[in-house]
Image (cartoon, rainbow, N blue to C red):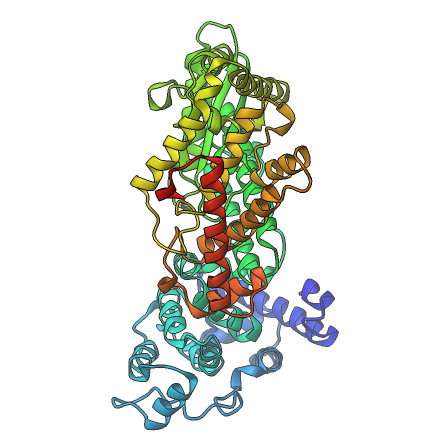
Length: 586
């Protein structure tokens, strides 16, 4: 109450009144429970029993007790009514016509109101809301839940109309609402914060993927209300390995949702979102590494040497999106007997921490196929084995992947040593007779991807012609051919900047590819967040199309599609020249 008063949510007078009332009602509650030694909160109806309660509360007679108790409850009611005065806001107050959801037949005025809001099937929405009012979902099984629903409906339906796609907004809100185990707390939040209600409706309409997450975890709304940075758990505070997994999943869920919400509503840019997703993944790996070390030490003894966890792919390049996998490799340095066994057990616990579903949900899918020897190799790789493999056995595609190597957790000195080994191996390849194989190998790989994953249209931003893989392959070919450690950069944008600085300033190829990368990455960030993996244009809500236009500075979606088609065509032409693709594929 003091915090609410300090923030100006309640007045000084209301805070003092409610604090006094709270103490008085708690005192009465405790004495009710003392009378019969039972868990109850109801004042006895029988005068004799209530008189005993009055005496126990320090009163000399029943009349004074009843008078004060009634006065206290009336003060609380007055304060409540003042705080939630908007509860009585009607459809008329929102500038709407009829909104009647009782009876068997649809109210013609309500049908008209919903039609004017843009609903294509008003009867379906009316029937759904009618069932809610009848208590057929957990959120409205109490009288209070139904009262709150009645109060938020005008604002909710108006907000759905404002999205431009009220049917879709209503569909996703229904799934969210019907997934609530109890509606009073959530509905009270939405009623008290009309801006939160509008925000929720817009989020559900823009991003079906976030809507599915909210439907499973409606408690995430509290993160928006709190508007604070979630507190990061500490490994040492967890009572057990399983408790650590659960505590981080709760933190990760909240942080991930808030990041997605900020990106969706334009509060952070797409490149900033990539940094935040990557930092969250890094923090997750650091936390899970710490608890995996502690658990492995507890079971099998002290750590027998140095270790490091390294990211590759989007994790290594600091280009994570919503739902990205973790490409990781674990490398250790030890000559102790049994080191391989210890670090294998450590790695298995690390993967469990990152991927295992618990009661608090899941985190990531982890991919370790980029380790030496792929699935056939050990999950933890010794430093000498890593060095030998990269210098003597690695294929061209493995050195392409190695350009994305980045240290994430563990011993920093080992991290620097491993990165040096990787850079040296890449440069050694470029100085050896194997150099002449690099362009052909990369071209063959790209042609294979064309055949096996030919792309699914304009909005395939990853594997289609002129999409992100074209740019990444071109940059990686340059890094493998030039034998310059300073040009080996895990982040594609920074690698393009390095190539631009190293070459003729008048050569605009690298600058164009960087601009194209920025466009494709910005659109992919929103696409992955709102819908998932690479959908077609027909799957996009209208609100999402508008959000994409704002993200890249286009006035309308037609202009955006025209620009995207032009950029992808130019990228593929340029990449076709650099990768020496046959004319039919360029």
